[in-house]
Image 1 (cartoon, rainbow, N blue to C red):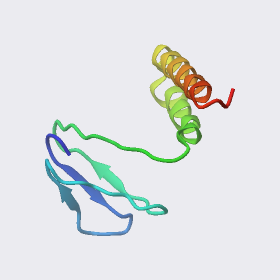
Image 2 (image 1 turned 60 degrees about the vertical axis):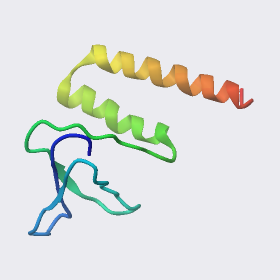
Image 3 (image 1 turned 30 degrees about the vertical axis):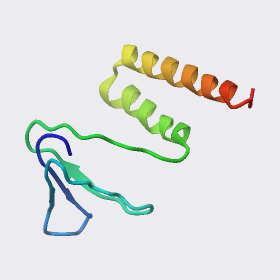
Length: 93
């Protein structure tokens, strides 16, 4: 967390976990948590693994929830361009 608080809990848990600026909220593999930022907050996220496998979730949200096709188009374009660039840089294409 950079600014503000983040409240988190495992489904079924009655007590919230509070993460404040400077603290790290680590989500182990296979664990699901819900979180809420009660006021304005900024958090830095770090993802590892197959990032492309997360794209369908983000695209589905853009299509069915926010219906923001302009942002969706930018996201798809930037993602595909960067994936192609990384594949080319590593000699995979």
